[in-house]
Length: 246
Image (cartoon, rainbow, N blue to C red; front, side):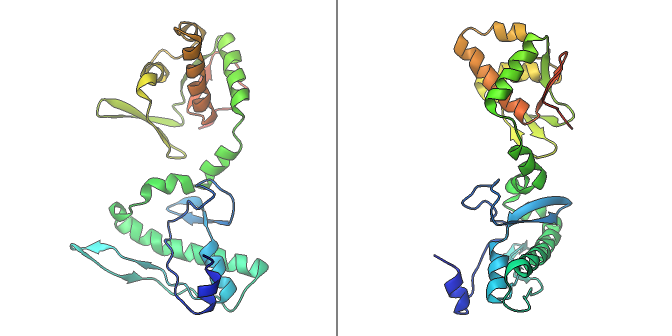
């Protein structure tokens, strides 16, 4: 249902400030504004702020933190457009409004971070993570590059400038220090990740040639391509066309 009709009729619309997935997914580029939040640039949905500008509706940021075992209602400052706005004026208001909303939200997140239930999605909002995903080379190009590197004597290992290895309950998780994405190795790929780990010998042409079947080799190459595309692994001993940055 369109939100324009109820807003034009003076009705109240409730929207969640951290509902940034939307129909185009977490990395979609439509109807987004970049603001600063928790020290990072993030790209967030701006539809509510743009609608407020179009229909000259005030925005009231509210939170319901738990304090002393009970919920409390906390309201932020009212954000009101100067009238019905269109075009560039509408976009400028939306950017200012969203920065104020997220500034109010940030203050309470820092006070009680354990109460932010959607914190696990924060890494998807970060502008750097979205740009990195949009410029990744194709899977076919990566596969060919990997095979060339291995044939040239290259050894693949975890990118220690980018990946933090965290041991948990007998397993090791890889966490990207830039995007905060986490990689949990599939059980079947545990030997591969063990070789790629900082304490492992790395993956070279000889190890790949020892795969028991052609399907196992292709599966390993697919996983390595996936990790290389996200700069989770780096190459030693051979020149690579794909730069691995911290």
